[in-house]
Image (tube, rainbow over all chains, first blue to last red; front, side, top):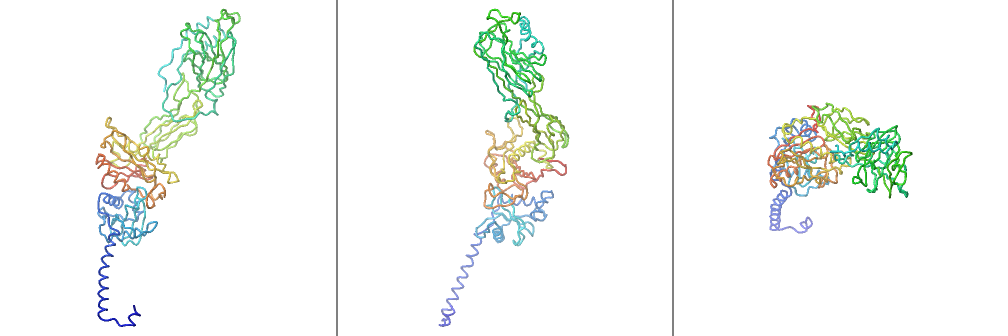
Length: 157
Length: 460
């Protein structure tokens, strides 16, 4: 492109065309890319299964029995009241969760689209599971920090 | 278990006829110890499979046939069998011509156990250290009582000889020495057969439920059958204690004692192995020790015992301690309420467990309405943080086990309620190596440690 320009000066009309074309491509490409991300990974719609998934983490997080204390310790979860544990329906968070989840699979995979259970546990933790990623009857659960940069635990439950 | 009745033995007739005949030798044998006795057991409690220990005692069956070409044969005997250890045997004397009179005799010489008989009119005596089991067949008064086969049983030791009774003469007038005796003539062949009588073993506990964990119970093992009040010969091989949930600290009886005091710390089963009359036998008894779970819902449930029983059955069938984790198998079933009795009944699906990480509780016993099923019960044969096997845990990813009801467990219960009429009050029960988990149709699950540290006892 530089050689071409050096050899022959572009007319103002040609430059205007290129400018408009570039802007157009940028405007068209941007929403397509965003749309693709949303299709790739979204949150599971909340249903009874999702509710039960959340309830199980509520059991662990709020319990004062030895079982819950042990689970919190091994999963690096804080002790919190029940209402600190909520299902996430925000697609941005689910997308970030999906990427982190995919990166930590035995064979990393961030390209497969997923519908995830994402549970926010207080301000510092997320529990994530893909209903399609199972070992027998168990789902692979991962516990992340709030930025999805650190995985604290990966368990089948 | 004892047989319901025993066969009448014509003692008086036999003895009087013997004296009349002047058979001094046999008469002496008779007088000493004849008695009508119990028949061999015709039915005993269900027993586990056993195999005869033929290297301990002679083979269970042995036969000797006495054949005579001389129809007026006299006293004859043949070596029959050795009993180096006391044995409980059945003797069959067969091949008799019911038109004739015979007399048969099995003599057992040597150290004696309790020797009695009499089931079929055979007599057993023990004068001077010699024992005879024989059939005073000739002395029966009427030919129509003659039989082709006679059977009797006894506890014996020593060496056995098979005989037919002494006879002499030409069939019309017979003498034994100078004494006239009935004439016995023989045709064909007569056969004696010995069978070792199989007697089961029964293990019992008193009490069968201890008042609290750690209290002792008396546990004993004995043959299921006593012959004429005498114990059938047996020797203990081993004792084993199997806790209901495979975890506990109760000790079995030591060594080869036949009974002991044992402190029962958790519900479980005491097994005993013994050689009873040459056969290897096993029996067991369940002994209960109540330990509160700490979960008031479970402890107050009328289904508590059925739930724990089913969990134990599933757990033992799951091989949860197999070091090859792919060999472990989830097991599943139901606790249902019997519509007739109202009792809570455990039911394990016998074909529901083939995978380490999956199971199928089945539909329960046929003919029950869905409303009868109150608890969906299964086991996860793993402990917290155990690596799941890569095979027999079919799925797309591997991981370490973390205790909880799985989403599939939850959805299965919900589906049963929706599709099959299981009541909405039904609950799921799961057990793994450390915990029981109870979960409702919807809501939080309740973890229940298998060991109640507050009470200091093993729930299961």
